[in-house]
Amino acid sequence: MSRIDLKFAQLKKSGRKAFVAYVMAGDPNYEQCLRVVEGLPLAGVDIIELGLPFTDPMADGPTIQLAGQRALSAGMTLKKTLQMVRDFRVKDDSTPIVLMGYYNPIYSHGVNKFLEEAKSAGIDGMIVVDLPPEEDDELCIPAQKAGLNFIRLATPTTDSNRLPKVLTNTSGFVYYVSINGITGAAAAKPEDVAPEVARIKSSTDLPIIVGFGINTPENARTIASIADGVVVGSAIVSQIAEGKSSEKVLEFVKSLSDGAHSAI
Image (cartoon, rainbow, N blue to C red; front, side, top):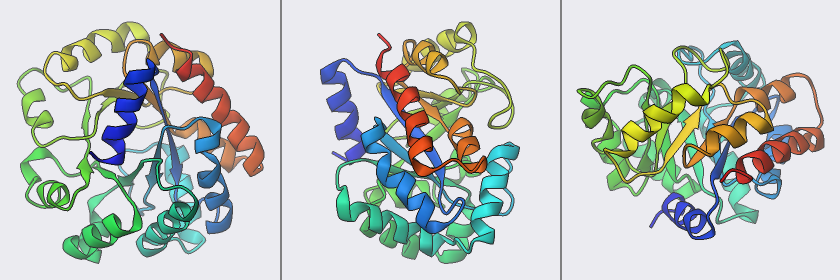
């Protein structure tokens, strides 16, 4: 079992929903970001989603785009992102880490080289938003052979004809995008999310984690109650953008995780 599989098994046994937190690697700089990432497990984060900075993040809204720009301006690279994971693993060998980003930096680095280094660094899974199932031979299948989960996105426009293709070769969990559009664009509505989660669950045994549009403890609790967990990204990144201290950022994260973990 991967760390992701083990985490969901533990959560299921304890009757808890998962709380996943997204942070852009290197935002606003390496040292401050590492302090936040290292503090996430104590703030109640079950799975860490670490953003890989990229110059053209087409699925992301202004908040995540600006975070990527800050990270790149501070000198963050794919190599340094992997080093951040290694640094994190010195103190924590159990919290799953999912790398979320785009294919270009991975392709430029070299797929086989990247997969070997990612696995060695302690990455457990990947979300690569611009590689559709039709391109599974590029990265998805090699990643799974290397022992990494490949997590796919399902959206409100993923109809019954498309869903089986999306679920093929997906592992770890399914990331359901609760809204049409980019990250941070709107609030997730439970009346819209619930039937979609139920529809996806009828086609897979994988956990369904809902992301996009979740930004308060109340929202996290409500959405988590109709899924297997939630992802919060833009709301956390906004705290970092505002110049909040690592301690203040982690206090905010704790309030969100408390919300998600209070879901029934």
